[in-house]
Length: 435
Image (cartoon, rainbow, N blue to C red; front, side):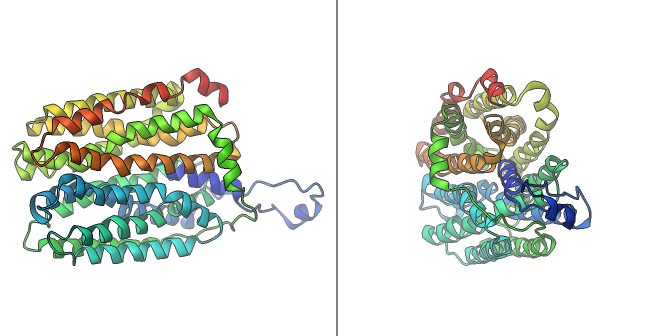
């Protein structure tokens, strides 16, 4: 997701220690005015850092958004004694920690703990996935601890630092660099389902398939840790958190926009977690149903690139409202899923619009921020709240589904749920006035 990338970039830029252009200028600056740090805007180290951050996103959030494969496998094969709602808590806790945990990880990053976060998080993610391969059938608590908590903490620890470090090298080309990094999670959400669907029910079995996946992720994380290098020293001062949060809470437009995005994203996880299971239970051949998440996430990758071409001309608010409206209609259309053609159609269109929406969440906060010096913290707080949607949405959908697979219930809930978010989204004139 690009929101945390914008958060880390803005926060790093505003807090970075100033680099004077020359010793003479530093000595002669009697007024003590800050000097803008110099950004190389490229070079070998800059692009190897981008490549490392791309791999972190591929292995972290890309794996989190592939949970729909596990939801299907657990429900039909490995955790058959557990309900779909109980199983979905594994993925929802993971998603919540990855997104909301970025606020905590970002604070440690600002204090200079980049390597501790990246190396420690990578080790925890790798260890947790290997432990997942040892979990036994029908042991929900084992899988919850390994995949929900362990893997979530590992991915969440690396998510924001890997994004933020890219801002050390780019200012003018930062949007391009951040787009490349964010594409890692989309590519991961395509590759991981392909690999898992072709190994979980093979002769490798659950343990062998998860170990193969964990081995791939461990190798890529090791490479990522070797590629990334921070360039600027940590800031010398940090703004007090509590007074700043109280001031944010008095900004009505910002609060309403945050609540609106949270309300919309409660339904966002329904296709990600349940589309494959939905297709299989409606009679779509498993070989075809297994491609549903791949199609959705590949289309989401395209959707993430589109706002860069449209937002400046049409406006962030206009596009994000269009994306949320189209997404809500498509969620309601899941009631009618019965054939592979309908699964493909919904996956392609919904994936595109949700990619657009997710990409524009951080820019929406940006146009609502009167002081760009606090943009990083504002985005971090917003995503701390938005992460709650990933925590509660999938379990509620699973509870509505029940053991009898009443698919219309969660589809109706997910499609109607975004409607309250539309009046909470600010109108374009209000945004322009605060820009």
